[in-house]
Amino acid sequence: MTVRNTWILVAAGVVVLGGVGAALGPWRAAATDDSVPGEATSQYAGADRPSAAPASASAGQAPDYLIAQRTKGDSAAPLTLYEVGDFQCPACRLFFTETLPHILREYVDTGKLRIVYVNLPLVQIHSNAAAAHEFAMCAARQDRFWAVHDLLYTSQEEWAPLDNPRDYFMNLAESAELQQDSLGSCLSRGDTRALVISEAQSAFRAGVRSTPSFIIEGALMSGAAPIDAWRPILDSLYAEKTGN
Image (cartoon, rainbow, N blue to C red; front, side, top):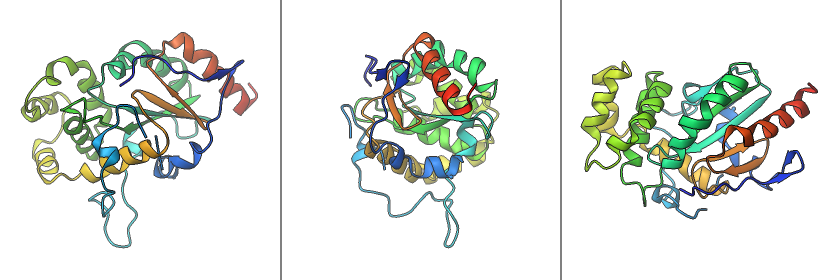
């Protein structure tokens, strides 16, 4: 997690970083459809690639990356923002509390933008991050990702220092209206672990080195920037895409 903002701007636009677009892989393919080596990288990012795609995949069947369940906004929106986050990252929580509500109201709710959440738990510095991401992706299997997303960030200071956050997460599950038996089975089997590991590796290869980071229109940006920094970027990209 890097608190400083590294926004790369030229005039009113954003510098396009070579290779980022090509590294989006399954996020882009699943959302419509490799990622960033890092400063505080996750052991997930450096781990050996899982031998199989997510556990839900079977022979002859495309893996389910649960992209739709963690996408917010109109599928026809001209802009797609990939938010690469860590649920235990304080800067990610700052973005969630201070900036995201404005983006949702001004750009997502108006049909200009959709957001896809990408998992990058930085487990070397955030000991409970992996468990939080697996919990959130198990919730995604019940189409409750965003409810858990909000609860994890809202209660981050409570679960982050725990030796074992599982019981706390199971209590959060009640607030998120999750089916407890299915959730417990998903967590016990590690159903979403391969998915989270694979996605963290993709983010690593795309060039992500800190959280929160953002990929939009081939540009990579990092830091919990305020809405005043986002508006000129999103307005410029929207005008470029739509002519409005």
